Image: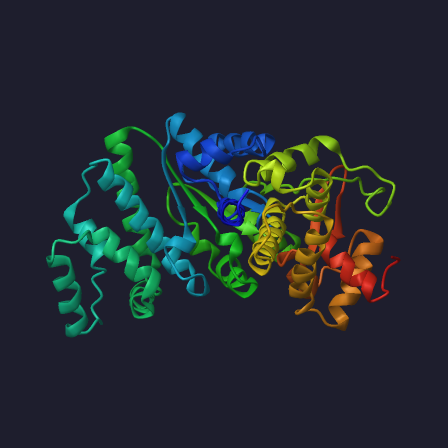
Length: 431
């Protein structure tokens, strides 16, 4: 094998490892692994059992496979007779700027887009009020600019979506327009949804992905202070939330009360039982390891990584698919660097040494946000399988994947395997 072909193979693996979540038919055919079947069945049941305006809350660690599962869920619900709108809030709004107003506005735009695609008639007045946002306070210059852009024959829906994503002034105008009369915006959502029902004779289901990736403070603002406004539309909506939210008693109570149904959760794969979690002689659960190995092998050819190294990589993921991908990409990056540094390099596999170099960099990333108080929380969680108390600091560590939650007969916690190395190096836990 030439240096160039070896370089290209690791480049290809690095790119393939970036393909998460799986959304297109091509990605699903190439990379899909059977995962989360029980969670999928539970989601389907809770949606079918919900009222026409039911709200479903879906929680899980960031990177545990929710987005890929939700894309599959949306497709299955479409096949079962629902009119499904599935979108990522990250594709609609800058994540640092998400609020309850632009979530509702994004729902309206996505509903309108799907209805237009299906040639479902929507009253022109409703279209105009959504797409030109009839903001009485907007300046004449802004009005002329928008009218000019729309008059150039462009796709109005794409234009509005682009403005919502990239222009803070546009988002501010929407917020100023609707924050004191959210009911007007909700009425537009409901009107579009009813037009869809009348035309298709199908129930409407909206699935919003990536709300679980919001900063903790935004999560509180949206779900604690504005939940009633967010839940007003009279249609089924699936909202995603970070796992840390359901460990906050106040937020969990608010969500369960507003939705009227239990929070659905995507669990992290458990390679070890709670009793065996720190036993160096314990053997990881083979069935779970094999699933993760299959995820890896579909993106990283077997001859590019030693099998035992691949198994170690899986265990270091802590049962979070995104973490497996992150470790594998970091390892590929190390290989690409080695190939560039060695002109005669024509053969190379990811081995334990390369894996450790990748883990070193990831470990340093984790360490950059840790201080004495957080180390103490991590140490207690490692030793006891739970925190001394569910403080905001603990929830932040849970939100940031420093701590992982597991479930079997009970809910318990452990420290991310990469972070455990930091505790050992600090002599806070036995090495």
